[in-house]
Image 1 (spheres, rainbow, N blue to C red):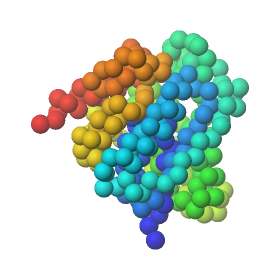
Image 2: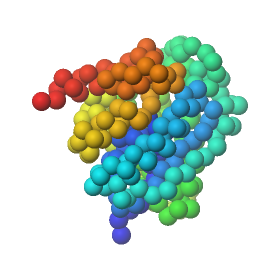
Image 3: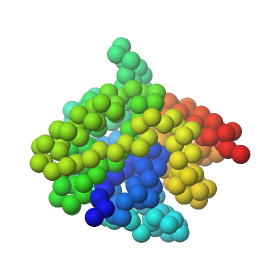
Length: 233
Ligand code: ZN
């Protein structure tokens, strides 16, 4: 039997592309999201809309989409003092990490996802983590997630595979992956109905989507889109 997957789906560009990747690959795919009081809460609205649009668009693989799980992780707000949850400017700390970093956030997300996957009979966790991303979050690194895969499989006494299809891609290649998976219909969907901007700006529309255009996440997304468009024949 084909493995069944659970995608960590935030509503951003990366996890939306991963969702399409998983739908094209597995017969049954569910999604999980986390509400932790993030400043860019608009992404929670985006993830619902993106799921609806996937079903409404005649993608070959849309039939694999199963149910969504949204977990309340508001406890993260009480242990974090960062620009993601507070009204603070995004800056870089002495250790080089931006203060958008919620310590160990992805470790926690993966372990909650693994618990849900176990209960739902899903064996694969898919996440949009990426080492080529500018931010260098240590809980997004390939070795961290490989170690986590081993720990979770042992702790559940059941194989739990962690797939990170974007790990070695840059943002331009992530746009190209969307093109390969679902053509311009999927690129348009990612452009319009995913959210990346740290400030939660859904007012200003650009060729690469909505956002303030100034924060690091917007700049990365915009630069990736431009490179992708220039390389496209
Ligand atoms: Zn922005």
